[in-house]
Structures are given as structure tokens and as C-alpha cells.
Image (cartoon, rainbow, N blue to C red; front, side):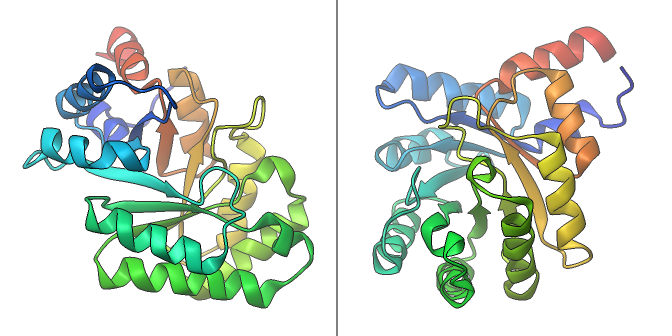
Length: 230
């Protein structure tokens, strides 16, 4: 397998993830220590874990990602805005919000644009990155392209493939390629998440156009890289 990315650059693309419902303090400590050690871009945790991770990561440069309307995306816009504001207040540095798939399926594109604009506005006001989770498992190619067209106008920081919470419904190379192509030269980047468990998975997603990876196997991927290429 060829590798055109350095260990440092690969680490800087990874959101090191633990979104388990039964996560314990020792799990969060391990997550944060690994993220500091390898120089991961961020940790991705649920809301109740943000404050503790903020303490553990203070001064390290490792960010904190959290989901909004996670994992279903069915909250009202008002609820999503409250979640966005609150989680930023308690320490989130990046917001990954899940779109309202029902509204997209109904071709309510005005709603989808407003949702994206309003959440992005809060993020921009607080110097926080905004990622838009499509959950591509449920979407047709045309629906994915429609969301990318909206994103090209609104310009969030990333379009993200998946929540990672659907069995067998994680990131697919063909979806990453489709999103990358549909976004064109808009400047919006692609995050692949869900089912990225090996170095090969990670490199395939990067080759397809992803510049950020959400994975609970960050340390394993780093170890595999060092074993093969260092």
C-alpha cells in the first residue's frame, strides 16, 4: 500500500472518538491522553463529557467535537440552536450537527438551507467549526448532491458522511468521492466517519477526498502506520 501522507498529517486529520452511552471517566482519560500523545485534531464526545475533557485537554491544542441533534437529526431548529449554543459555552470547539432527513426527503430545501445558515451563524460568532452530518446511508445520490449544493452556498466548514451509529451505515468511498465532486471549489471540506477501523480504511477515505476522519480506532491506525512506514 502506498502512503502519501505523513504520520503527523494523518494524526491531524483524526477526530478521536468515544460516543458510547456508558463511557467512564477512565475511558475519557485514555481518549485524551492518546489524543495528546499522537497529536490528534480533536476528541469527539457526547455533551456530558465535554467539561471533563476540557479540563484534561487544557493548553494542549486538541479540540473537542460534539454532536448536535445526534444521532437522529430530528430535533427542531430551535432545539438544535440551543444545543449548539450550550455545548459551545461548556467547551465544544467544533459542532457536528445532523440534518433533518425528513425535511430533505420532502425536498424542503429552504428549510435545509435555513437550518444550515442558523447553526453556522452561531458557530461563526463563537469561532467554532461547523460540520454538517448527512447520514448518507439514508440518502440517494441526488439528495446528497442537493445538500452539497446548499453547502456550497452557505459554506459550513465540512460536510460529514455519517454519525457512525448505524450498523453497516458508515462512510463509503463512493460517497466521499461524490461529496467531494459535488462541493467543487466551494472550499467546504469532507469528513468521513463511521466504520473507519484500519489504516487502509483511513487512506482510502483520504484518497477519495476526505480531509477529516472520525474514528474510534485512532490509536490503532497510528500504530499500524508506524509499523508499516516508520
